[in-house]
Image (cartoon, rainbow, N blue to C red; front, side, top):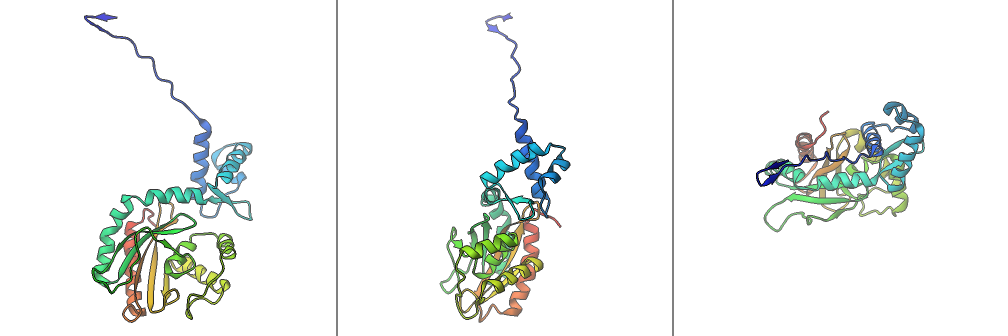
Length: 263
């Protein structure tokens, strides 16, 4: 209707695009993420009140994309794609900002190099560090990739995987002894990963680098899954078993404060 020089017209309501299958797909992902033991198609159909045909179709698409993975019991867990996307979010400033004060406190108390890193299901990456200002120190650049088959941090990240995935990874890579204190074979190394998974921390007494010890603890996401880690590294002459034990307790306390997941 005319109103002076202005014309007021009724605005048509905008049509919102709706894609019901997306809501169903994300509901399936959330159920898979929450359940620690894995869910099958029948489990998901029952929990979400969907037909098995619908669930099967969505599951197949997710499998093709690598968003989920299937174990030998026909149960589904989050796959490397989703882990990677989730950790790309963690790679941002939020995790570093939250972790930095605790890393600085750990350095102030123990005087050893502190690293923060994330894991995308395949590779681990350093995203922050606190270290001594002078030359004689153990260091690595931010952005460096961490060998999964070496050191405390690799053990932490491997402990987040299913046993069959660890065995598959070990089969793909030639098992290397870095020095005389390294694990002798893949079987012993797998036993160590199981131990780490149970106790919630990992140590490295000169297994990777001669004269260097380390301890690492996990940082968990809101579902209780390991998405990042803090680790402390020092020369074995000063960073001995007694100091590692004290550091481990302090690091576990710090990681719990940083983690989204509250036990």
